Image 1 (cartoon, rainbow, N blue to C red):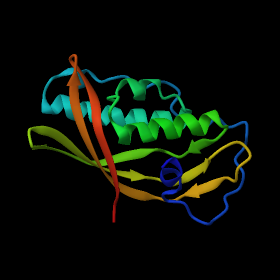
Image 2 (cartoon, helix red, strand yellow):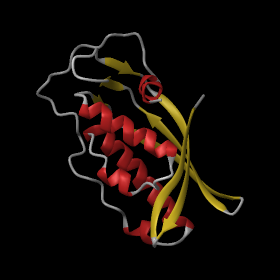
Image 3 (cartoon, rainbow, N blue to C red):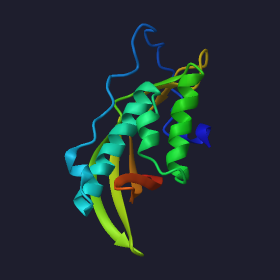
Image 4 (cartoon, rainbow, N blue to C red):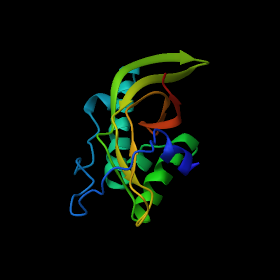
Length: 168
């Protein structure tokens, strides 16, 4: 599963080797939870989902998945696939170097008594390496539709469901 996620957007172009002294983390600090995300409202859930996307970007940049894991329900398989991908990639000497996902649209909806937050993102191309010594690969610009189900756990939002669809 991690390999499938990793290779989405791959091209056959062989980018030049990045400077090994360059750090892969343009975001040096863990994103802070915005005050708006503390509200038990639809607006609070939306602010939390925006924060969750920032945590995904941070974890991709750094391999530090602690805050992302804390914001994730233990039963969220889609979330876990990203946590596992970032953790295993950095643990094996790999990395991701890209600007991350940019939110272009966000829409809440209630379906079957559950709040869903539909998010459209743009992913700008970059480079990645699966593990130390592996070939550097290039990713291209992509658009994705994401579906999040934020739920409250002891007064704190967590993502309990996360699905990514490739945009057209």
